[in-house]
Image 1 (cartoon, rainbow, N blue to C red):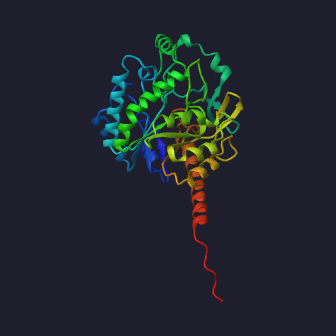
Image 2 (cartoon, rainbow, N blue to C red):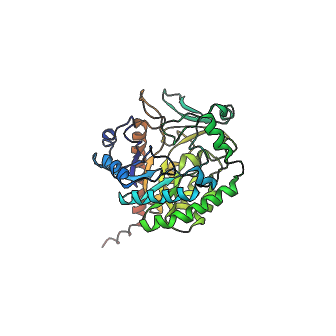
Image 3 (tube, rainbow, N blue to C red):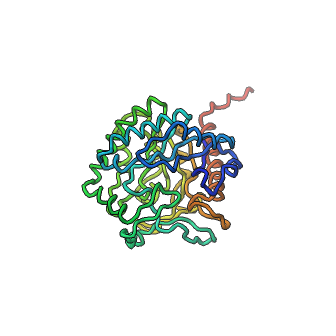
Length: 358
C-alpha cells in the first residue's frame, strides 16, 4: 500500500510540516477546495498546489475530489459544459503526476453526520449519525458549510437543490452516472488516471434523495457501466460498514481488481441507521479491517490507502474527523497489520526447503 493522509490545503489546521513527520507517509490526498463545481481546474492552479506538497518532501497521490456538479447528476442544461470542465481538470492533475481521482455521485450533500463531536467513554470524541436526529433537521433553515464538505446551502439554495431531484429517482441517477462515465473514463484511461467512485455515506437515502452506490449490487452496476480499469472504486470501509448487510471481506475480495483507493475507517453500529466512528483498532468497532486488508493483500492490491475519519484526542483542534493524532495512530496500526499480512502471504508463496542431506 501507498500510505497517505488527507490534507485540506493551506487552511487545514494540520500543517504539511506535521504530516511529514508521520512515519512511512508516502503522500497526501488533497484537492483544490476553492474552485466551484463545473469550473475547470487550471494547470497553473494544480501545479501551485502540488508544489506546496512537494516542498515538504511529499507527493500528491490522490485527488479527493474533483466535485461532480448537480447539473451532471441531474442532467441539467449545463451538463455537457460541466463534463467538459471535469475532463479538463483531469488533464491538469494528470500533468502534475496524479494518477488517482476519488469522486462521488451523492446528490446535493457530501457525506452526512448529525453529531460532529460525540463524547466517547475514553474522553475522546468522534462523529456520529442518528436517523432520528436527521429527521428533526429543519431544512428550511438551510445547511451550513463545514470545512470537510464541498459546500453549504442557504435556505433558498437548499430548496432549489432538492427541487432539482423531484423527478430523479435511483434509476435515472444511475443513467446520469453511466452517461458521465462514458464521457470521462476514456479520457482518464488515455491519461493513465484511475477514477475511483466513493460509496454513498451513509449508504441509504437521506432527505428523500436517491443513493445508488450503497452495496455490492450498486457498486457492480457502476463498474459494469464502463468496462475499463480506469473505472474503479474507492473502497471505504466506514461508508460501507455502517450497513450490517454489507459483507466487507466478500466485497473486498470480489472488487479487488477494481479497487484504486482505500479509506480505512472503523465504525460502531448502534442501530439500523445509527452509528458513530471509533478507533481503527480491532474490536473498537464493527468493521473487520484485518479481513478487508487480508483480501486486498492476497489479491496484490497496491494502491493509496489513507486512515479515514478518526477520533479527536487530547484536546486537538482540527476539522472534525481530521485531527492528526488518531489518524497517525490508525496509520501505524494499519501499517503493522499490512506488514504482517504481507509476510504471511510471502511465506505461503515461498518454495519449501529442500530435504536435508543425510
